[in-house]
Length: 198
Image (tube, rainbow, N blue to C red; front, top):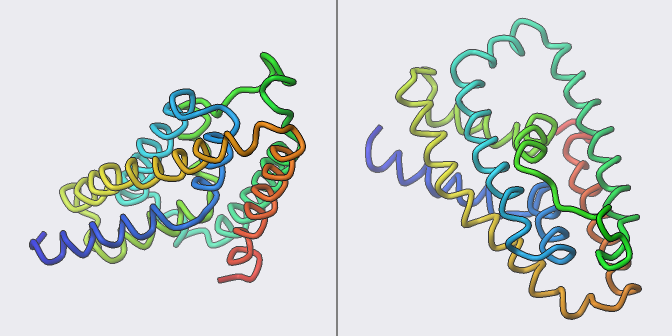
């Protein structure tokens, strides 16, 4: 991979990682509800889970979607249903002081698994493989995955910090509930490209 192509990949990965999407909206909500440190496993799950997704798609899973187009429809339905359920969970989340032990941020494994039903994660992975590792060779796919992992973590960290920064405003239960409902509505809104067939 040439330096010019590598720089273009870094710009692509950064732009796709830092712009709003399901991961970032959930991290913002987690930062506000639980703080930065408890959200670190969630952040690591996103970064490492997405990098693994890039590798697996780049090394062969893309062929399954070419061979069986119905899988694309199945993936969209599962993604929409799961994201609507997550939006409901965020909207109805009680403040940590009320929820006690029931309230907890997403775990590393939950966040890693979530990438497989996150429409934006799929778009990022497939777009990066198509543009920057079109030959699907191991070296090219590994570079794409590595660049995504490196640029993704600081990008999504910004959203967690932003959520944590809002926490002092959200100490009032009614403010936190309003924030959680807004985050849930934005999460549902992030489904529009999938529902519109884009």
